[in-house]
Every structure is written in structure tokens, then in C-alpha cells.
Amino acid sequence: MNDQQLFDLITDLVMCHSPSGTECEVDRFLINYLDKLGVGWEHDKAGNIVIRIPGKDSSRAIAITAHKDEIGAIVKSVGDEGRINIRKLGGAYPWVYGEGVVDLLGDVQVISGILSFGSRHVSHESPQKVQQEDKAVLWENAWVETKKSYDDLINAGIRPGTRMVVGKHRKRPFRLGAYIASYTLDNKASLAVLLALAERLKLPPVDVYLVASAKEEVGAIGAMYFSQAKRVEALVALEICPKSSEYPIENDEVPVLLSQDGYGLYDEGLNRVLVKSAAQVGFAVQHAVLSQFGSDGSIAMKMGHVAMAACLSFPTENTHGYEIANLAAIDACIPILECFCSNYQ
Image 1 (spheres, rainbow, N blue to C red):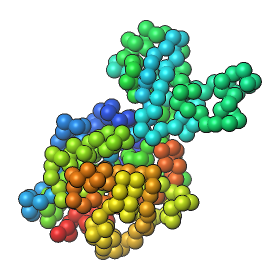
Image 2: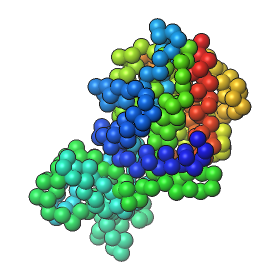
Image 3: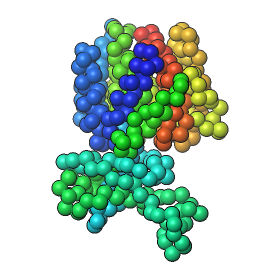
Image 4: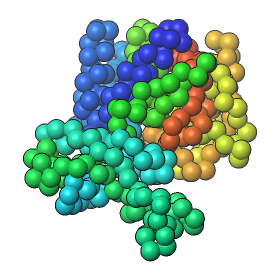
């Protein structure tokens, strides 16, 4: 696909809310897309959407995963006067979202409200004064203002456990020349790559599972279930890679291959195969060692569910915030992984 088609597909995915454990909106999009492609899928008990591409040797299998959940917040309590108390869901920080529209995904109705930190024109007599001078806003200091009655909120299905995400009012991606800027590129952009692979892969040497994995942001729960239920010999996670001065990578058109993250080492043999696959289709890769990071691959490998795991990613600025990534780096992951799957031995 060209870069505008890729941008449009990522936009469609971003606009589907999918906080961890409440992923039905993006599920509907994925299922409809796959049905139009004529590709078979399974929705397993952990919430993963699993696509099986039959191979020449069905006694062996590999997997490519891209998680479909996004970070956000979770309702702790519903207070009086339309005020909702919230806590983080995954690696979310209130100061990253800022004050603005958020959506509460009620059991009956989606209610929009304003993530709020309190007024600025205050003295030290007000608790939020310290946030202006001494420390960042914490979830315990923030709330969602809905201006609805307690009964209206309860009737909409807003309760402890309800998920909160950035409102669609603010979510639509923005084009910055060769770049895409948006909330939740982690990991909606990787889902776009997975869908492209579902369309392009035909009769690989071994079975290939393409997994839109559930609840990754809260412990790779979907990938853990999948890799226990379906024995695969290698798993490649599709991810973002944080652009930071501590990591020697550039936010350009070159994807990134990880050697280590906060959960442990990736398999160097599998990495060499991916580097070779990239070269065969005319691409280079960058290499990185990350600290505060984990993926479906590293977590499944650490738990002994897979013998080999790798993580192919695209450089991203402002990770877990308003993210910026090069469309060409996202797009490059498609032919690299197509070559990898089509020539796997």
C-alpha cells in the first residue's frame, strides 16, 4: 500500500477505542476487514483474534503478533456531582493527556467528560498549587468532570472498572509530511502491518499465525494464552520503539530490531534471520537495547512459552503519549516480515 493508504488504515484503527480488556470496537473493525479479505480468523477465549495462514508443513508454526489494546485509565469510583475518580490502566500518565475530552466506555452508553486537574489561579491553600511548582500531576490528583447526575452515570453503565480513553474528539491522526502523529500508534500502526501480511502471505513453508493480541499493556495476557495454547517455535512481536537520547536510533524510515528489553534477551539467531530478510528486500535495520519496555515476544520467551522471540519495531517519539512515527518505517515492516515468513526454515 502507498503511504496515504497506510495513513488511512492506521487512522481507522486509531479511531476504534480498545483499552485493555474492552477491545470490542477494534475487534469489530478487524473482523469486518478480514471478512472482506476472505481470510479466516478465530476469536479465542483470551480475546485474541488469530489468523492462521496454512503452510506447506503444518506440523510446524511461527507467529507474528501485534497487540490491539491501548493504554488509558479505569474508573475507581463514581462520585457526586458528575465527578469520576480514575486510576491508570497500563503505562498512562495524566499529564501526557492533559486536560481535555475523554470517553468513558459505559456498559450501556459512552459518556464523554473532561479530564481535569483543577484551576491554575490558586494559592497554596489549594492542593493543585503543588502541581504547578513541585511535581507532576498524578492520577490521584485528577478526575473526570461529566456534569451529569450520579443516577445518569449509573444508568449509562459507568461503574468501578469502566475504562477511560482519550476522546475521539482528540484522537484523529495528523499528517506531518512523511510522519504520522497520533495517540495509540502503540499499537494500532502495527495492526495495520498485520492486516497487510494477512492479505499478502500465501502458502509459506510452515503455518504462520498472525495474532492481534489482547491485553498486552497489562502483562501480555493475550500472547501468554496464545503461546501456551498454540505451540509455535518462533514469535515475532510488532511494536513501537521509543526514540530517546539514551537509545542510538533515529526516527527515520529504518525499522528497529531489539536485542534486549526490560524482560530479557531476544534470540540472536532469530534476529540474524530477520536482518537477512530485511537485506533480501532492500532494507536495513537499526539495533537497540531498551530498559523500560516489554513486548509479547520478550514476555512469552521469558515465561518459556516460545523457544525464540524477536521484536521488530518502528521508531516513535512521545511513546505512550501523542506519538510521532515515520510512515515509511512502519511500511518497511511489511516486506521484511513477508520475506521472513515466506522463507522460514
